[in-house]
Image (cartoon, rainbow over all chains, first blue to last red; front, side):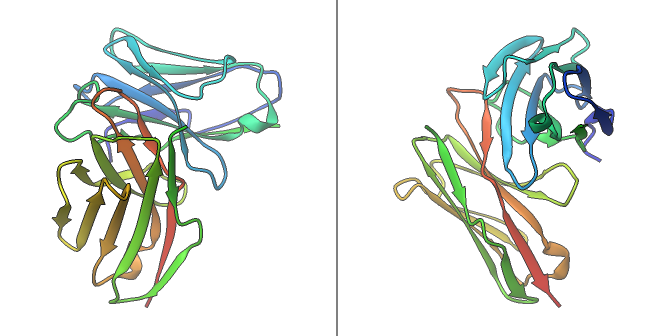
Amino acid sequence: DSGVTQTPKHLITATGQRVTLRCSPRSGDLSVYWYQQSLDQGLQFLIQYYNGEERAKGNILERFSAQQFPDLHSELNLSSLELGDSALYFCASSPTSGRASNGELFFGEGSRLTVL
Amino acid sequence: SQKIEQNSEALNIQEGKTATLTCNYTNYSPAYLQWYRQDPGRGPVFLLLIRENEKEKRKERLKVTFDTTLKQSLFHITASQPADSATYLCALGSTGGFKTIFGAGTRLFVKA
């Protein structure tokens, strides 16, 4: 158990809809990262937050947005969903902004999104 | 653009042998390189980190090398076991930036 909690574990929805994925980082971790993993694809970096502020952005679509709240949990909002958005969405946390002595990321078990 | 390449073909080896996985990267000057293990439907799990000024790092049956001139890392699992069967991901991180980017991973099958 990594200590990172993601909900929901599974989500099935229709095209055009909007969903919110939630992530609770490990206790004390200030950084939260979001990744998308499609079938047989690698982890695609979406966005990173550190202590409530956006720190780095990857290939995140304009239809997607995220935020990190004062209690450090984070939410990833996906709107106007398309079939191609079906994927595993992983959240990871780390103690610092990226300059940690280890740089290790702790991943949750992911939220599997299916868009029909 | 930044690119990380790992063997897309699965690696099949016999139990007890050494598995060697390769990670190559371009257009990147990472401060460190990491290896993760991912089982089907699960989140990746951190294995090892090696910094740009380190050539080799070991942890139990695992060994990682890092050649910043060749822009390549090799990941070795010695005395491999069927339980080592999984996908192994290479990841790069930089001190200047804050994002860690991953390769697509190499699937390893260890046969008993």
